[in-house]
Length: 282
Ligand SMILES: Cc1cc2nc3c(=O)[nH]c(=O)nc-3n(C[C@H](O)[C@H](O)[C@H](O)COP(=O)(O)OP(=O)(O)OC[C@H]3O[C@@H](n4cnc5c(N)ncnc54)[C@H](O)[C@@H]3O)c2cc1C
Image (cartoon, rainbow, N blue to C red; front, side):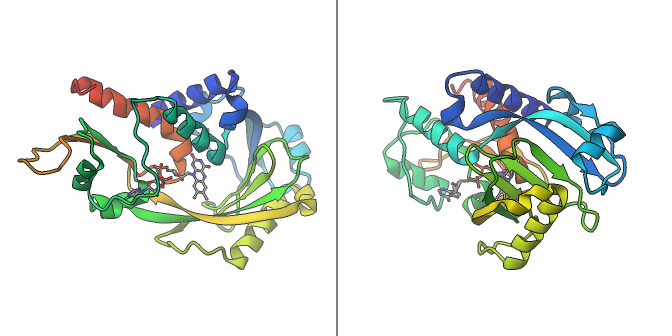
């Protein structure tokens, strides 16, 4: 996982250092995290630049409410999902003659793909939670996440603050180019896409406790998404004997990234390509 994370981080850094940074929604951002007790360094501490522990004096500057006892800081990459996806789609469309883009169609079975008039050498299955039905993967489950978007242009850093009542639910504050994302929730096996007032209120309360100036922010919108949960990412190649049927001969599964799809995307995509190269399919 660390390799997937570092390959992805380096890919985003390359975009950040290119003319594409703005359209792709990729930028570098200072970050700090605060905890009630000391915690081990995260695995990714060696991937991000400038990882350092906060001294008591540094912590006191960030934690004006004197809630936290421990913290670290680093520089991170923000990848704005909405912009980055648009950027990728535009890039794929530019592969004239080499890419067929079908939008808005739900595939009920992998055998159905032959009806789109192509003889696919391989299919890469990146359907996230959809793999539950598409390939009958019963280990997939939804992890419901609710976020709130506000206007607070004075916030130019990422913050994560531990929640004592529920350590799996930290307050997080993620600056985007025009708004700030406040989160979050993590409800396993909950696939209700309707935002709940109690979640919104709890998110705002936790984020305002960590960064009091957010009380002056302006609400823009909120949304609920389903992270594709799985005990581990599924990234593997299978060959199928179609026996004259319509099953694609090769399927690479690349799904089940839980809450880390943006963090691992490029590294996993690289491994998917490598699997195809090893099998001499591309
Ligand atoms: C609230 C929230 C916060 C998040 N925060 C982070 C974060 O901080 N860091 C991070 O790295 N990631 C984050 N994510 C991203 C996320 O957790 C996932 O890991 C990521 O979206 C997975 O990407 P994916 O492309 O594999 O799956 P998805 O994004 O679920 O995309 C799957 C696509 O396949 C399509 N599909 C499925 N089945 C079919 C079918 N049968 N036929 C046709 N199309 C189909 C779906 O419509 C969808 O477009 C967050 C997500 C949420 C909801």
